[in-house]
Image (cartoon, rainbow, N blue to C red):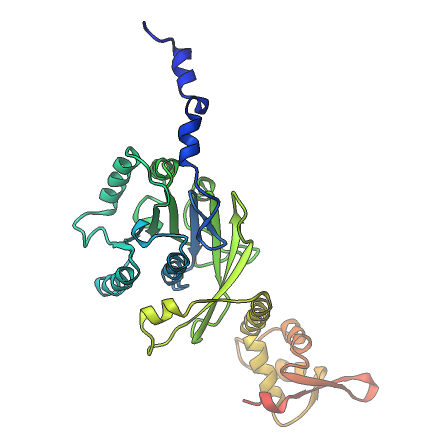
Length: 341
């Protein structure tokens, strides 16, 4: 007997397969502690050279060591590395028992991997399997809504079977008007992910101690709103040393680092004003009028404005120079001895 279209619709209802769905349910646990829940699509994005790959590898190794994941269940698709980098990371993956796949080294392609995902999604149970895509732009057209839609359809078919997807993505070089990272691509990516974190660099790029802050911008579950990590970076360390050296910061350490970053950013913003004021104060204390007089006499075409010099005098008083009260209640500025260099 031919089925009616209504009967066909009824067969699509999840109520017809509740036992199967219950069997596929994942325990509420993390693939990456505090941030990436099992069974979800989680996006981590940052500016280049923030350490996304290093951090994600470190997090996965921690989860394997803690017993939350089996190494053999983790598939790291590394499509954004050179041959030497792949070999180095491959040795680490082998040590901890997870898979490291580069599409081209495997004589395939990112498109070939996506086709394989489609086939895997049609097969059986993928519970607790973790797939990392590094980086997103290698697998889809970031600016094409149609391409992104097809891409996430494939990933969602894997999640329905129990897989966990972790994506590393890039953001634009420039921040938005509020100083926030801007994701590279259309908004569809963030819409189609279950969870997303922007990774902010909280230390000088040249510093040996690199600090990053993960800020949650989307969640579907109980994940951390903010968490900070530190890793060391210098020429004497191997990549594995850096991976193993990743440490989580306490709230107190994170707050201190954030304060230091804000201070560093302010000094960078006012570097021309600071340079001018330090030069003006060398060897003699001056009041604000005398400092502004020197600014007026300066023939430097790139000299700072009167307003910004006044702002810098106030902002960095007590830190770069000392302020005392002179005659007629004038503010007298004198550079601090330890800041002469």
